[in-house]
Image (cartoon, rainbow, N blue to C red; front, side):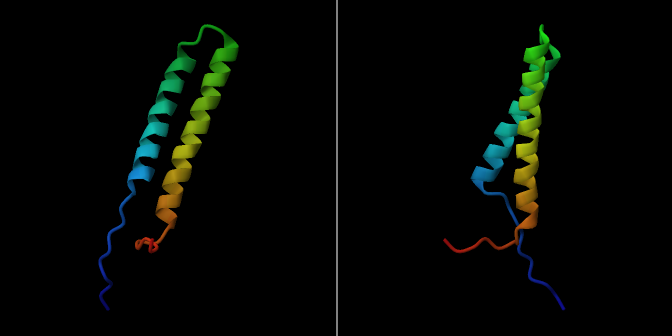
Length: 72
C-alpha cells in the first residue's frame, strides 16, 4: 500500500508571476501608506488588493492541480 512519491513543483511562469504580483502588492501598500491625498491612497490600496488576489489565485490553482502535469 505504498503510494508513488511524485513531488509537485511550480512552473517557472507560476513562480515568476506569483513573485511579481507579491512584490507589486507590497509596493502598492507602501504607496498607499505614504499617500498624500485620499484618491491616490484608494487606488494604491485597490491595486494592492488586486495583486494579492492574483497571488491567491495562482497559489490556489497550484494546490488544486494534481501532482503530475498534463502532457504537452
